[in-house]
Image 1 (spheres, rainbow, N blue to C red):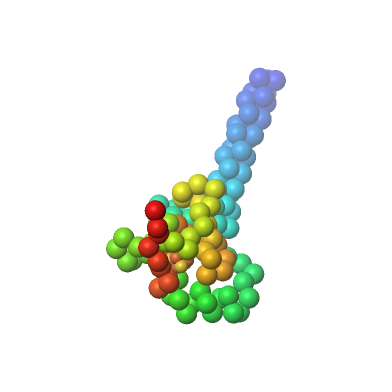
Image 2: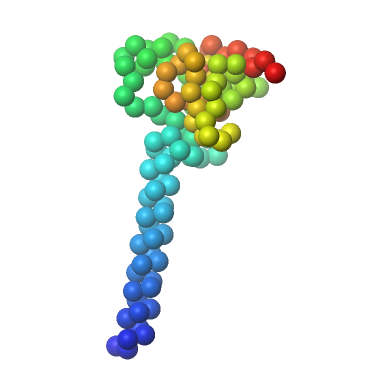
Amino acid sequence: MSKQGISRRAFFTTTATAVGVTAAAGAILGACGGKGSEDGPSCEPSGLSLADEKTRTMNKYVAVSTTEGKHCANCQLFKPGADPNACGNCTVIKGIVSPKGYCQLWAEKKA
Ligand code: SF4
């Protein structure tokens, strides 16, 4: 095998590894609240207290709103993340929330 053949193999191995690492990083970011599917980021919080979990559940928070025209991004209580599609926070519901999420505490955002 020529020196050039080994070099080519090394190139393809390195490239395949880099592609795999990039794909894995995307999957990890999606799982921990980074950008997710076209429905928005998953924004699943971890380490919430039972009380905070209960507040989330009692107010029927969902990651993807099914209520026409109402979602976290246009709620007065939403604190946006780094960009419009990133997970944000809420002044009432603890833990990260999706800009496309919704709960029964939704309040129209004032201009
Ligand atoms: S109150 Fe509900 S709808 Fe409004 S930002 Fe918080 S979780 Fe989203």
